[in-house]
Length: 242
Image 1 (spheres, rainbow, N blue to C red):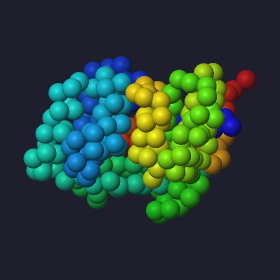
Image 2: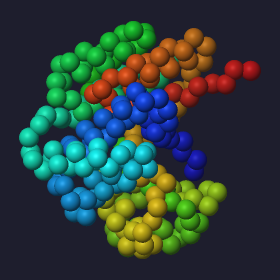
Image 3: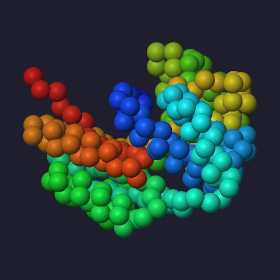
Image 4: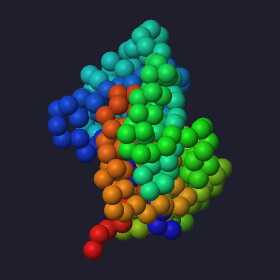
């Protein structure tokens, strides 16, 4: 059904500074996930998926181990999730996911990014209702029927399944992530998931053109520079100039 979605921009990091930022973001996310659901990846599927993703993005094992040790000890910073929503250049919709130990500071930093790019931060829920909060699992394969059967037998609420170019992509509500991943692993063995994450997918896209393109890219760059920002989702679709 051709639903476009963004992969993590951070995995494209090339400079040492950018890589350090990626490691820091993963370390923070692993710490929070392990603290909430337990440090054993076998009993915490969200943590297992996160660690697999970190390894694919070449995060060193000592960064992962340090985050798990910190969660095990129960001390350290007390990060909590925060989500901000608003309208970017060209009136595109933007969702910013953060992990913060100081919500007032983080809100001020995020708001400044919006203000400096002629964008407008909104109230909670102002744009998220126009996104689907989806678990996305993609792996090599072409048997759509066997995939659907495995998921239905495990009573997983599947939103969509795509079968394109030898790759199966499963979309499910974010609450079904662990159950969907377990069902696929049980049915097909140890799968190497090409995509294994939870994202906000826009229900409709917003065309961006002209001067708004540079402003939009500046907004993304500014947000991704913030230590507290984990992910940025948006509805923008940049129009190609002739």
